[in-house]
Length: 482
Ligand SMILES: NC(=O)c1ccc[n+]([C@@H]2O[C@H](COP(=O)([O-])OP(=O)(O)OC[C@H]3O[C@@H](n4cnc5c(N)ncnc54)[C@H](O)[C@@H]3O)[C@@H](O)[C@H]2O)c1
Ligand SMILES: O=C[C@H](O)CS(=O)(=O)O
Image (tube, rainbow, N blue to C red; front, side, top):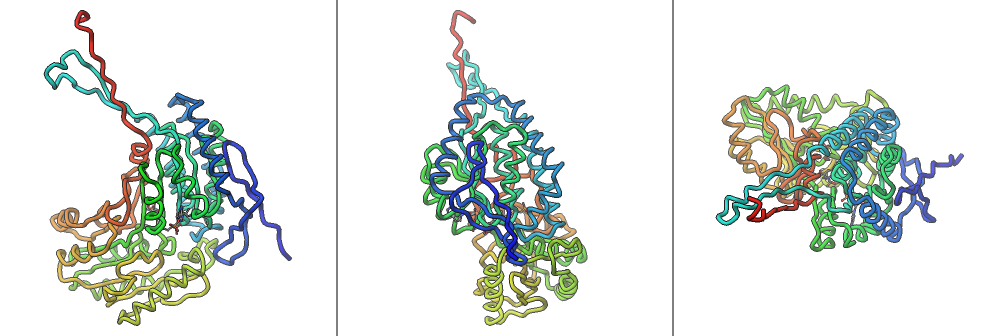
């Protein structure tokens, strides 16, 4: 029997609207439709941008205490409905229910931090009299909102990575138009409900659902959109940066994150952290562990322990609280990962565990002896596969870690502070975790990378900075007043 799926609406300028065209969101675990979602058009996107500009202009000065209240109330709403949010994140995406609960906790914190940071959008005084002839000048600079922010977000953290756009935009006093990933739009729509419930003025937040390729360009190129905040893959990122023209664009892109394990590391600690870092969210994680370089004296011990710990992971129903690894976001992605692993094996790599696909499930996989020419060695796998390679020393480990076109985050396990500082200086990345894997982040820290991993930084305070502009004010005091 065909059960009728829930029909949801998108939020445009304060109105929940249908569209005459819809698309289905399916559960990756069984391909069952879970919702019918409006297929937003370029016209819908235009309306959202116009409503955003109208709302921003109308509320010329939106007092900070009001922004703090709305953000705090939205966070409270999310807390009160946390389990509903978690079930939505899990059902439309590929996280287990426990991983989804973790994401909801982080998203609540991201919005709470946004409320706190709204208090701290300050400037500073400027000592104009450092210049001769400016003794009678006093002044300062402060930050003002850009107006309308455009945001495009990925599928893998369908709630918290939308919160990382909406929270800072609203904290700074901007209006924001969000285009969430087409496969996981429901979490973004629930976040919008939280802000409507909190009394966000109409037009300050729109969520236009649909295909990035169809409606993204309208958002990216519109002159009223002063900042475009994109999180996603390098291909889309490249397209968007070409389309954006002379517009402030922040890019949170892909990675192929390395971890170094030295002879003096606590091996159990390193295995535990790297297994979690490699396989949480089925490896669909921009800072997920993809390469592990292990100093040769401890290589065999590390590899054996890592393989046995990986083989213990429970792969299964993502809604089961005992499951460690659920399905990938769809069968196409699982087949891509399968083909990359097979290419590496054809080129001489060795398979230690995993290497098996069942529909959209791909089993946690450990490879060694992977040649540098294998795609999986230098591209972003964005799946549950990790490459483990022996190295002679820290120098070789750093060299090989840097030898890809990504530089988001890295990890190193060592008990020697000199080794740690060598790694901090030598690794060409946006973040180095000492005795943690690359997959470590708190939502308040600056987050982003170098090389092909992106432009700019997120993390609430840093996103607020990118969504505001400084203005200098200088008073020249009249002579007779002195
Ligand atoms: N650096 C980070 O903070 C971070 C965080 C999460 C994910 N990511 C990256 O995101 C990727 C996985 O997410 P994904 O598969 O959703 O990425 P994706 O690039 O396929 O899609 C991301 C978003 O861009 C939209 N989009 C796609 N093509 C577009 C176009 N031509 N114009 C406008 N919009 C377009 C999509 O609809 C989606 O909303 C990985 O590369 C991962 O590393 C990075
Ligand atoms: O996938 C990339 C995410 O930004 C990493 S985290 O989930 O925010 O830690």
